[in-house]
Amino acid sequence: MNILSSPRHKAFVGIAGAMLLATSAGTAPGGSETAAAPFTLEPVSGDLTGSGATFPAAFYNEAIAELESLAPDLTIEYSGGGSGTGRSDLAAQLKDFAGTDAPVKDEDVSTFKGGEFVYVPTVLAPITLSYNLEGVDTLNLTPSTIAKIFQLQITNWNDAAIAAENPDATLPDEQIVVVRRADGSGTTENFSHFLDNAVGAGGDGTWTLGYGSELEWPDGTQAGDGNGGGAQLITDTPGSIGYVDLSDAVESGFVFANVQNKAGNFVAPTLEATTAAAANVTLNDDGTFFTGWSDGDEAYPIAAQTWIIAYTTQPDADTAAALQYFLTYLVSADGQGLAEELSYAPLPAAIRDVAMANIAKIGA
Image (tube, rainbow, N blue to C red; front, side):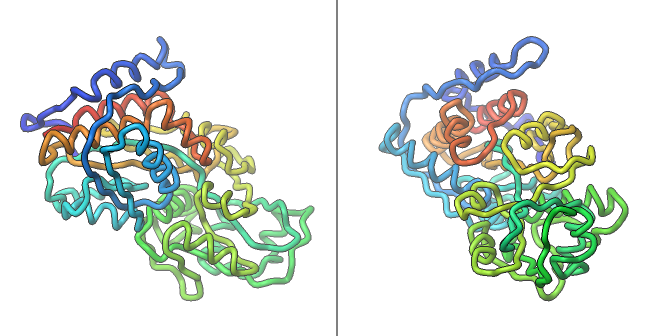
């Protein structure tokens, strides 16, 4: 993992220091949850560009629109493109920040030309299993059945395995069309990481594709660019199923499956179930964690997290201040409230604290 501090690190805490103290104060004795701090920073000016994960893109773009009125001299552009694109762009110093749903691999850290970087967790959300199947409004799926569907080992909707998990459903004799991402995707990584933990290397071996932002999918799957591209394919393709973030799934009007969690319960992809999953994550010192396949009776098993990553040493103080301003807004009460309106779950207090501490490490 990226090392977050060293003798060479130059902390720039002016703009974020007060917010860090306020946010840290949001955890009561014993670690109980309290509200995030409100956003009270003075406006800054500058230009920022970012690219990467489409999973949080609706939140980032709405937050950018809100900041246009709060800081009219600050211009921020976020172009999406997938987590892999964001990491590559930041590594090559083509962007000021990157959105990523998965941590940078250890072997790739040395490719980041700007040196040390920090992870700033921003929101949580469930990855839905959205489907287009007329007459089936409720669907339960176990990890084993999901793995077999996406490996094209189960190819028809009335397969005995699906029927056994849905005894009250009338399943059609219809071919399953699997929709997956074409681009290097953090959503793919989190979805496949869940399967690998549940029924892959961490389970009974049913899932054989491993996990990562790009997989060797079997021939016959349909690929879309970004969460939006995958959602469009599902909309256009009767009999299809795909993994799509909740925000895009809700916007598309999809129905989505209940997924069996580690406790054996079928759970819907709600914000409450995502928060329940986040309550049991292992939070690393650098701010990374994995929300999928968490413990808990009410935890949704394909809950996911996302970060913005940025270099700790910026080319000038104005860019550093602009980044701190933007990132602080995202994890403030104002930003987190906006996220909930867009079908994202807010960060728990402990994760907010790490986010603010990492924002304070960004300097010039």
